[in-house]
Length: 249
Image (cartoon, rainbow, N blue to C red):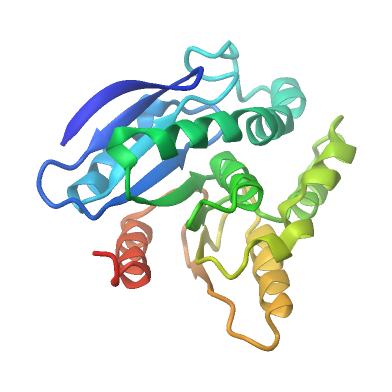
């Protein structure tokens, strides 16, 4: 595995490239709230060892992009969580993915956007915004933003300042833009941070949109797993991607 610092437009990130088998698939991996691109190297390395190219972009208010002092204080989370998601989808996605499509290390690759927790919210927004992205994988996140925001409020959070923009950009409002591209939703059934109901609601909306055809969406709940990524989830990602891209491998 080769690890390189890269610049995608004006965004710094990590590039992990396989040294043996190359499946010609690039996974763009968005991490969760308060994490770092460097904390994702372990999972990125696992995926790279299965033949995937992995790109981990920095997210605003993290790492070198004006990182917050204490991501997990309640006032900071309430002020910046949705602001981070909305900024990334509105302002980062176009330049980032254009740079990826034009990069020499992704030429001829299928493009997967994968996100964990907050990264799952971002990845859902990116998938709706950019029709060139081939696959969405959302782990412990949500593609039903208003549903999740309402649950956050029930759990004690104040209503988000960006509520109108959240509603306007909510991926579930734009199901027709999916065009039956493959989607994999994985969630811990015991998740006490981001309720699985957001993923479930998004899945049901996609399925209802494809009443006359079979929607290419898979939603899996993992019993006794809270807000974390476990080995069975990684195994599912690898096997599911192989199934989706068997014609291209």
